[in-house]
Amino acid sequence: MINLKTTAPVAGARITGLGAYRPARIVTNDELAPRIESSDEWIQERTGIIERRFAGPDETCASMGAAAGSAALADAGIAATDIDVVIVATFTHRHATPSAAAEIAAAVGAINASAFDISAACAGFCYGVGLADSLIRSGSAKHVLLIGTEKISDVTNFDDRGTAFIFADGAGAVVISGSDTPGIAPTIWGADGSSMDAIIMQPDTFTAAREGVPSVLTMEGQRVFRWAVGSMGEVCERALDAAGITANDLSAFVPHQANLRITNAIVKKLDLPESVIVATDIQHTGNTSAASIPLAMAALRDQGQLKSGEPILMVGFGAGLAFAGQVALAP
Ligand code: UT7
Image 1: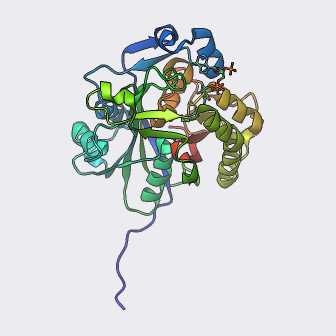
Image 2: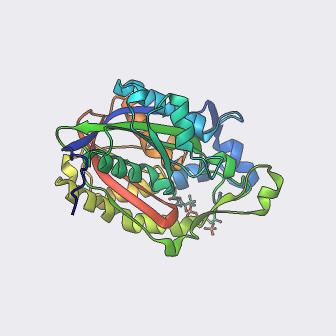
Image 3: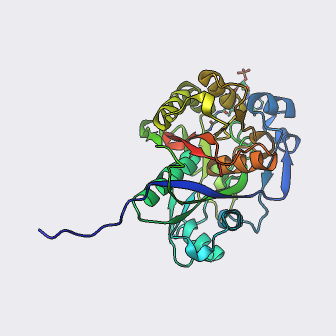
């Protein structure tokens, strides 16, 4: 039998750069509330959201992703031509094919990279971190550009009381590169397709009124809320165990910014010490699905609260129902 050659494994991978893109238009609760007979008070109390951002008509999931990607490359101090793989987590790219990743790779000048999207909704960023870590440690890639980007305002029914106020637009990105020691611990992940109808993009009468929008997002909010509160704490505990650390070792907790009440419930379940900084970017950014974790990480950094090289815990969860969590060293 012939022995084939393969790549030599690498000891570890690390997040080396971080970038964010927030569209300019700030949308208040008061702007959205009248159409759904809601109020600023109700939205803040039930979700923590004070305001969110919506992309402009000329902005796309790919254009925002490219802006965040370029910022992450500059932050990492590496050239776009050195990127081996571009991975994009999104569910709001305009085309089923080609991928947002291919469009973004061309836009940022990552001309030597392979490029593909992953479909894991709000868990997509953490799926991507796990994937990038594996690609690098197996020796298949040296530098990966991972982007979470969403233009959810394109697929939102603003007359739907269950979704109109929660979702928003934006993009966040990281560069993940090889390192001598592990900077990303094992990913705990899964999916339960038997609950695929809990959050789903599907044709809706609303779409008849909007050209170019094939379907809208619908969500059984309470069902997703109960699932997240009931099971994401355990996913986090397993991620901490897999990393060989405890909650006391963490410097920050950066969960998917789904709902501030979900974040608070997980914090309580984990009994996080007060020293652990908890990301609450949802208050000013809304729920940006795959973009929310890198955006929240960037917000912490802007506030001087992200300690480079210190362990942070991330967990993403949403449509699928898919989830993923891991501990990584902060960029
Ligand atoms: O990112 C992907 C994963 N997604 C999530 O994790 C989202 C999970 N779900 C949620 O965050 C929450 O379920 C929502 C924020 C979407 C909704 O909050 P809720 O506390 O679950 O509201 P609810 O549907 O249980 O409704 C509670 C009450 C009801 O009134 P009664 O029956 O108690 O009198 C609703 O009629 O609030 C009423 N209500 C509203 N009131 C004002 C429902 N929607 C609204 C609204 N404005 N938009």
